[in-house]
View 1 (tube, helix red, strand yellow):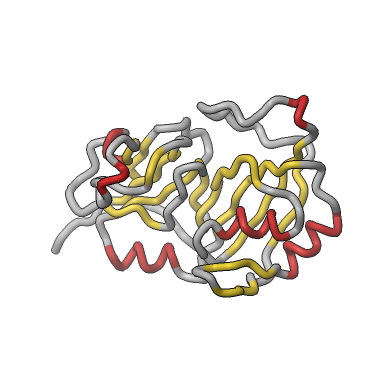
View 2 (cartoon, rainbow, N blue to C red):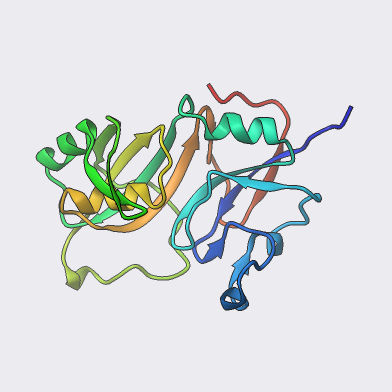
Length: 193
């Protein structure tokens, strides 16, 4: 019986969630394989876009990959938004908002959302976000079970508060904890729900 391996990674800003180039245009991009010598067949589950950071689960097991991507597993994000997010905007996020996915309108499912005050204690991003002279920002925690392309970014934009920084901090019961950007940890005993 094949023994599968599982990893968690704090994906830094600017990395693609892939191991090989699949397009000729991406030759100068940073890939996950530059961070750690993952075993052959490792796949990133629940990808984060290049501009997003945080918890990434990687596995050599397709069954575990399917389970992580299921609608039963919560994914929590800390999101820095442009402006001071309002109670009304938070309530809209909780109820679900209309976004565009693959040129179609999509109604997001109800989710958990709340303003974070004070801001979360995260290490600074490698690339500066912006200067305070450009106006205030605020942080919100958003927990979803779906996973549409750039969904959280589209959700905050739909309520009038564009995302400036997005950090996934939890997948099910697995959390980012004290991992630093670029750090990888092999996990053996983990629970998703």
